Image (tube, rainbow, N blue to C red):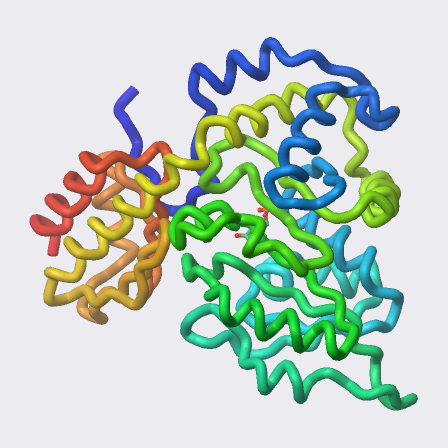
Length: 336
Ligand SMILES: *Cc1c(COP(=O)(O)O)cnc(C)c1O
């Protein structure tokens, strides 16, 4: 089979021989009875990395964020978040459908943050007319952007002074840590819960982990069962997550280098302008004169997959090599 270079997302990676071997060899048990040693090992490993007391392996980042929202908020409570953040935009409105929660979405700034002033103004004082502002949800990285540490310090102070709980959608938190060379616990400290994806740049086929204190995780475990997310001999999948944590964190730096290289090469085209290029994501605007759907079809003939749009997101990951990028650039040169 001809090699396919899939730039559409970092979720498309397939487990390699090392990861598959780890999955085959994993000791398993019934995880609903908390009898699966591989799941427990993964949860402990992730909790230690993120710096929390406990952790819970879940099927997806969407489920992980939903569990956090259901845990932190009561029916009718409000959570403040970004209008472009995954938790608000791409999770099917789960918090409203299943938790009767009220989102307060704020515009996301260019750097991926939310205005501190706007957050401040959005926190409702106690008043019978208002939904109680209970939770602030941030995302790091957002569209590849690493949220600056000094911003996080300010936001944590603000949340504390208003007794607002804080959840971090850290789907790509390891990208943030590697790119900024900041210890991951410096980023996560002060958050009441953190969700991490194993199935993005870390390269596992399935799964996320929700991290928090033990009583929070106990409650989340019940919500997970209620949502149909109690899985049985799931150590087979957790083993891929352990393998990812043990082998694929430091190599994220390669994805970041590749993204920077791709951005530099794309910037040389007169009909392409770079919107942003951070960590493992490049957002490139293609001139109106280019039929992006046609372009995607042409690239596909050569084994390169992109998601056509006026602004195309290119994601680098462990199944994208520098040679793939060179091929993409060469094809763009001949097509454009
Ligand atoms: C992918 C993603 C999620 C959700 O993960 P799924 O496993 O696809 O449900 C949540 N937040 C962010 C920022 C993501 O990129």
